Image 1 (cartoon, rainbow, N blue to C red):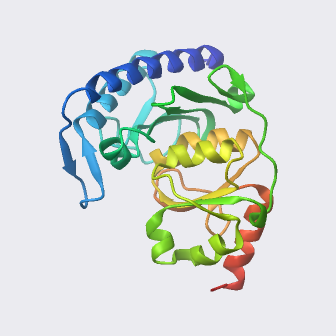
Image 2 (image 1 turned 135 degrees about the vertical axis):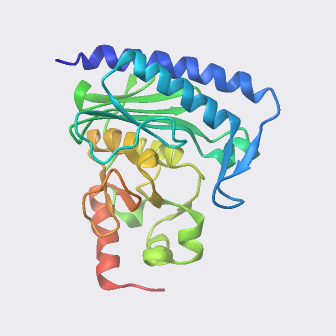
Length: 263
């Protein structure tokens, strides 16, 4: 069946706008918060309810699709064959719980392993970043984005996750030292938005498929590189230490990795 990607893009935008309102309504009531693997890895009733809603809407829009969801309400996948939707119902759950801000909803749609459409919704700012290869561009709501400037590491801010900096994983402290400074937002979706907008030249973190699936589609469409920390393509069904960067910043970071640089 030939997919009408433009129509699907519009349909998913409508679903996410409904999901946003549902999340805002639920935020008015006390949250039920549980730990997943540790006290800093949280899940709430809203994460679970939102994923159930999104999965049900995806089944309606695309009954033959396979779905990988963070909270487990989709399918068990061993490949990206066919059309695969990868869903993060609330990205940045700690921010959601503690700040009621700086969190996102994310969906990536892949066809036989190739990213076609990505969606990152900054819920509190009400800005939906969407687009990809299938629709030849990336938009923030209705405004089309242009590719960010291809700045080297020294001329831009670097996004990171705090544990990687604290424990100096993959020479992260040297990378930050070589940049203009570090920014930590606590949400892969918000970090990726900053890369899309050229506010940072890169981002490094351990990411699972739902953390990077949508972002990789949008970033690649704007000529921003997405790879493992040593420059290899991502395995979209496993966790990776992911490097997002402009071409020049990627070159600089890979050189630091190759030279085994330390402060």
